[in-house]
Length: 396
Image 1 (cartoon, rainbow, N blue to C red):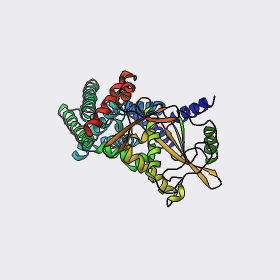
Image 2 (image 1 turned 30 degrees about the vertical axis):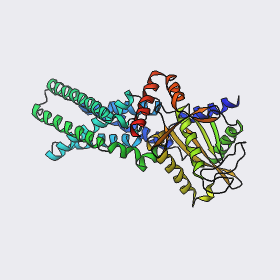
Image 3 (image 1 turned 90 degrees about the vertical axis):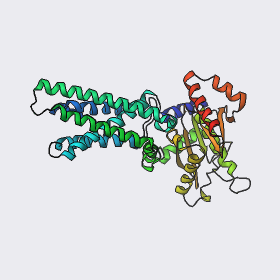
Image 4 (image 1 turned 180 degrees about the vertical axis):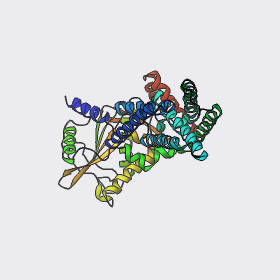
């Protein structure tokens, strides 16, 4: 009964989209739908092939974010900016050749970004988890972009032919396609040289997709935390008294940080879970060691840096945390971890350690135990884990 309470809370919170991301997706969806209706009304048939798929992508993102794929919100923003600029420049493209070329280039940029979203959705993956397959992803996205561009070209030619539009010239349309190809190619090259990494790691993107600024009041979060704590430690729940302070010596101890990190990694590698920092093993509220930091913001920044340096930036979409004031001058940090299909390791210099949950404990797997663990996974999970482990060995 107690475990079912924790599972229900984890399931409820794990399916949520961060409030800021949900608002962003909703606004972009409305904008995409409005643009599609305008395109339909004024007869911009070719541009419907941009606005309609983007609207569908946003709808899927709202309904099944992280189930189908997780696309960094900043990538969505860039795609929408490109779409809006295409619409604006297309209205004035007949007035100046530079604006005409800009409209073509931006079409290619938008198509390439759209192609990236489609590829990640087809792979049931996301940019932060696929850094090792960048060339394949970008080539696939470019091919999708060129396919859509070809369809746009054919549809526009057929449409203007039957409408008997006198201003239509095949060479002008061909130039438009050529410049769109250049725009898509330039975007692809920029991604290869780090544009996608910048999108993932940027502070703006992190701020949009983390759950730190909860929509719940502190009182609600406190009551929910007490409910979770009462259930006791389990496969999906663990308590840690501090982030970095050894409560026996009162001094900073890197082993405390390691204990926090290996618990997070174990949850990511198994079925997800909740880590309560500032709670003793017996469930009493000890209070996180906030006083050893200059401020709460500095404490949160330290925890973020721990995760970034020892686990990896690419796993932030699967880790969220928030501070909860528990009264009597004590606070805790609730860390929600969601299952990740890619193997996650704790990095100690050149050594990388793999942990999973076994009951209420985080267990390191090595040698034959790790091999048996991989064998018991599904074929897709096994392939992903083998790739991750092989990369670890190559890096060492």
